[in-house]
Structure formats: C-alpha cells, structure tokens
Length: 109
Ligand SMILES: [Cu+2]
Image 1 (cartoon, helix red, strand yellow):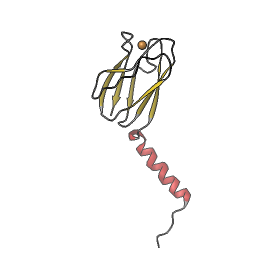
Image 2 (cartoon, protein in one colour):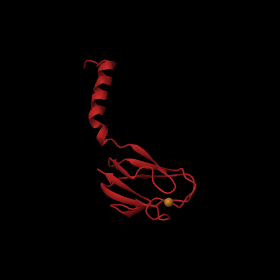
Image 3 (cartoon, helix red, strand yellow):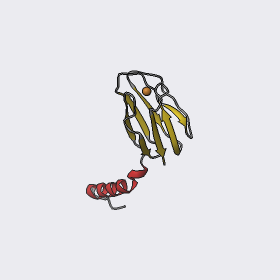
Image 4 (cartoon, protein in one colour):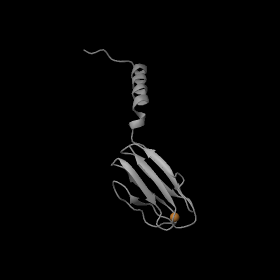
C-alpha cells in the first residue's frame, strides 16, 4: 500500500506547480469598451485564454478582427458584453468599425 501524502504536503505541491504553470494557464481577461477606446490598447495573453469585453460607454461599438490568425466580430452594441477564446497564437489587430482609430492589439503566445 502506498503511503498517503498529507494534505499540507499536497497543497504545497499544488502551489509549487501553480507558481511555475501560471504564465501558461488559460485565463479570462476583461477589457472595457468605452467612448471611443478600448480599456487596454495592448494585451498579451496565453493561448486558450479568453477576453471578455464589457461595454461601458454611451456610444455604439463593436470588436472586430482587422488582421489576425483568426477572425471574429461582435455585433454593434451599446450595452452588454462579448467574449472570444483565442485558440491560435499570433498578433490580432482589433478595431471598432464604428470609430476610426479605436483599436486594440492582442498578442497570443
Ligand atoms: Cu467604437
């Protein structure tokens, strides 16, 4: 019979594993959509991570891939949120098609 590890020892091992693994962990990042800019102009995330855009302005905006390894597009909205999970590495140039110059760069590594 294998010896049982104590709970504290297991937790310590998990904490150690997490400390090393965190940069590669998929996670969710929230970005505000405001008038007329994205709350984060540049964001770097891990492959498999999700960005959750939350509309916090008064105007109508959308989130659209202008250039990138994959394309997606939210509706043009005044309220609400939109999410996308990035499953391909690379650089995504995102724009709001309603407002010239309203853009965001996402680096997925
Ligand atoms: Cu806009």
